[in-house]
Image (cartoon, rainbow, N blue to C red; front, side, top):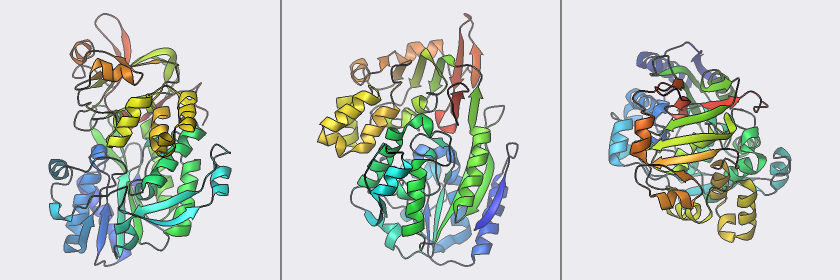
Length: 424
């Protein structure tokens, strides 16, 4: 049931608009006594989910019993991050999701179904896993809050991904990532209907339909001045809420280009991007726009690690970003990758497949570390002097020396593709 729907490419929703939309939806739901909020973590700071969670607390007060950030495999939020993202929500309401031990397997999607929807790319059953707090927390309302935006693992982020992946377990997260990678990221990016989405929809219909989950989706984009604006708010408990948000997201977050890009410079906000696990959105979101033999330069002042999870970091350092054939061969030959398929999928996602060069300019990692995983290295200070984020605007820029580049200030907010390469 769709509880609230508002949005367009030109809408600018204020805090009052968001408050009113939530009030309309909650009035239709009726009184609740035990509410769980499941927003994203700090890596999705710009989703405006923090502001919405504050409004949820404002509305429900003491009935909001728990806030469970959907960490997936990410590091737990620090006290400082919680305060910055959720400034008016009491800190003692926050719970930490443990993707290794804090989960319940609520059912299994049959291997035949997974094989069918993936076109034979993979052939294994998929365990539907959710946080214990969701499965058995006794809440009479579970609010899954987040932004719908193009996504490398599933096509379009959010909806039941926030539950099954954001609060999922080791096997479920690993296999969901690998399905998308094996099927082909470029066949999925920007699409609402993908193999991974169909698997999660199956699980939602069969295994969690009894849970009182309501989805609160935003669509966010930058305006002409570069300021973030909420373009849409969609609230409901079925696929219609996601489909509406996804349609608007494609309109405002997807930039289709008439020609491939020879040189792209991407800036990674140091407060948001500290690992290539997250920072490789600079690769994922531009891969379909890059020209053959083009150059992608990533300014990453906060970069200090590869994986936020210690084991994933180790695997990235060991196997590196060397393309699909190399990664699939390594996965076939090495049980440690077979047991961590999300890492294998990430190695595929983060490669250019040899089509274009990827140069990282890290704030904290060394040349040896960057080159050790298959990227090129450049000095951050030197490259920032050449490509100063304070002076660049999103899109095409012609520099004083005549060089023409395409600049992206936050890769998490969009998807870029060349018409000749995008087949959707």
